[in-house]
Amino acid sequence: MQDNRSLIDTIMSIFVPIHRDGYKFVVGFAVVTLILIKVSEPLGWFGILATIWCAYFFRDPERFPPDRSNVVVAAADGRISAIESMTPPKELDLDDEKRVRISIFLSVFDVHINRAPVAGKIRKLEYVPGKFLNAELDKASEENERQCLTLETDKGVRVGCIQIAGLIARRIVTFVNEGDTVSAGERFGLIRFGSRTDVYLPPGCEPLVKVGQTAIGGETVLADLRAEDG
Image (cartoon, rainbow, N blue to C red; front, top):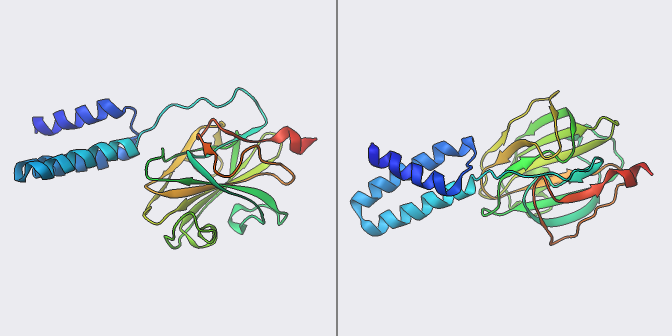
């Protein structure tokens, strides 16, 4: 038991902070690793590497949103895979006017904590069951398992955000409830393993990022809402 605790403490000290949702996975990997070490040293090393990767996956670094109001920040870490003008899905409870959708693809090496793109009240939160297609595919937005969230700022501007499960993602976790108020960059959920996050900007709001750019959740500015106002 002491060996278990020592291994777990060592791993967590390397990758602190780890989100609480990941503790049970890290502990599970560590226990299996100890068993593998007793069976075979090479298997034990494989288990150690797998446990370190698990801790790395669930890392939860602090982020510092821009000290600016009226901006939309990235809801996730990852590569901006698409910027398209789309009619938002009905689950977001937005109007039918086309909006710019910015898609961020999260690989298994990216931080998977999702963060609020704007400060405001959560007006809609709806889970939609679905498939587990490659999250980079366009149809993943309509066919994959997803969690839809709509935020309304204090000026009445609504921004949509969708957590989309991917090819190997099997669990979307949400930390907030409908009616909650969040700050820009505040953690609102996570997606376990490879996935995608879509942000729907207000009508007429233009993106400040490009396809292929790497986004940092809670910090990278996707758009300026003042441009939409004026």
